[in-house]
Image (cartoon, rainbow over all chains, first blue to last red; front, side, top):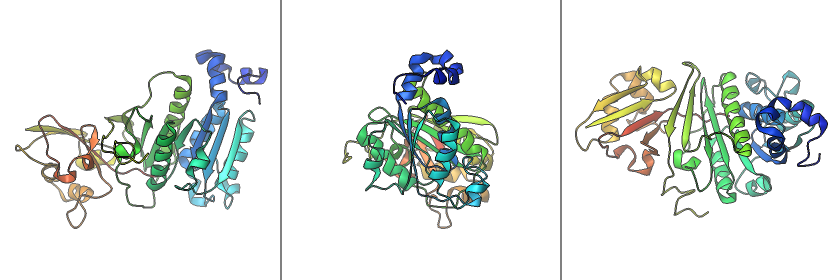
Length: 248
Length: 92
């Protein structure tokens, strides 16, 4: 794969989107390096659409093994994958989907000690995690590296999305100062489908510099009423992660 | 003093409305607002735990910031405030 040069195969493959943003736009996607935290419900969708779009390099990190209870929503994992590492299962499908994309799969638990090393060299972080403690670790890593952080979370038929740009928008901790207590989530498979697509769309728009991002806006999806609502946000000057007292 | 309250996701169904205006006395707090809003056991159980404390799972925003940025449940309200009440979403 030669960065910044589109092959004839790639031009044919991406023709329907090159007609929107041109070969230069497609080259921007090819040069992009995206870190995806999680290969579950949101991760499956984010990874599939970023791979199909022709992102140049994707690193996915997840520590989990595929279980039968994942299969209603984690669409990169199939019956035959139960018992396998999620990242291995995901990488296998994505490489078959689009061999032009450089995919790196790491089976690991993201924590404060390894996050800097894991995200080093990547242009942005996509939050496809299932817990807020890891989200806060990723939020701080994005702030310290000054790279965008694309947050998504789901519950039942509902989901939320926002795009965090360091120094410009509210960070995750500005919006959610405290993590909700852990619980076993109930999720209908289509919900991460909607939210993961919105996250992937934000990533693509950010790379291309097109449209308006979900900056300082928390979008809330109501799948039962088929409604999207928004809450306007602002940076909290006293935020412990991005405020003036932050150690970053 | 009037404030606007917006309910999101599953709380729309619990409270039966997407948004409403509430009239409160001067100096009223978020706690006063919630006591006014929770006029049924179902509403109360969705917001408060058994000991009467705000559930950690509920996120409340005063205008553009979470109430933890002010005085939490004791945060004073002002005329025209928009209060957003959001149930937790954390799965991935």
